[in-house]
Image (cartoon, rainbow, N blue to C red; front, side, top):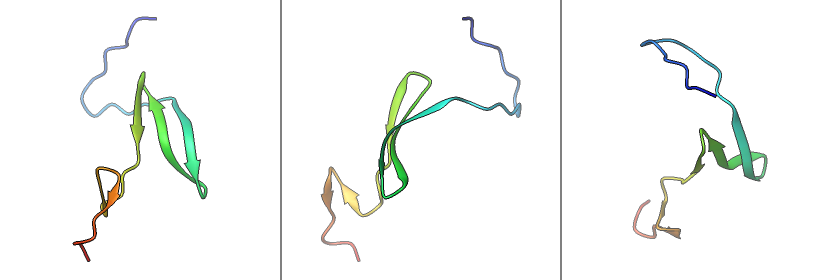
Length: 53
């Protein structure tokens, strides 16, 4: 299927697949062939940041 050319400020509805969820919040999603993960600000490299308050 060819990719549709989109104009600037054009709105569209993408298809997002939820791969993981924790406590009702999607933590890993797949969009446009790529996987994206939710990373909170108090986590660095998968470990909690002990120095940030």
